[in-house]
Length: 225
Image (cartoon, rainbow, N blue to C red):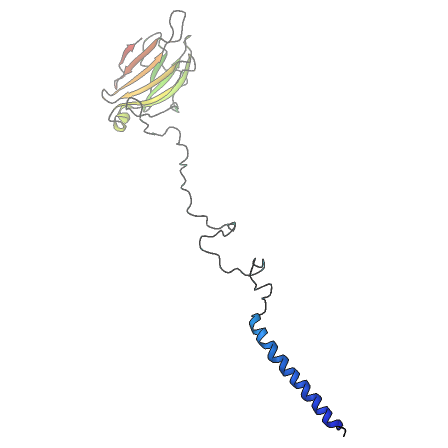
């Protein structure tokens, strides 16, 4: 007796369904044991993606080159105070403890050559002091009697009010006519001006000292001549 076509179709459908169920039961445990699928390139392990966002930089990390105009820390103190103005009292102590005060300029109203009322009467003097308004004008004297105007020295009353201790260096320079050094001090202990220089060199003498003092009455006392 032959089977009907309808019955054979039902048996094929039932066989196919049973096969699918068996495959499903077999594959599901294997898939569970295999674990999750591998991550893609952006989220996987290994070297980070160069374009990935790495998050905020760690504290103290290298932040790269600073932006122009950024604050690079506290400014370095400026220790350059500039050069002192010429002729100002710098108060620099000398080796002997005195103070230095340079007055290199002549008095604006002083004549270019010594006047007839100058205070040094020594005929061979290499230095001369002449009264001018407000003080004394110093003159350099050459070996042949030529002259060159030098520094102005303030009045004794002004010097006494400015300086109360030590020997104050008012001027230090060179006689342009003899190439000899010249130093002018104010002596606070005796209220005198002291001029220290040298005669021009001759065949008989070299660096022979010439030193004298002048008081407020313009009286001259030679110390070395």
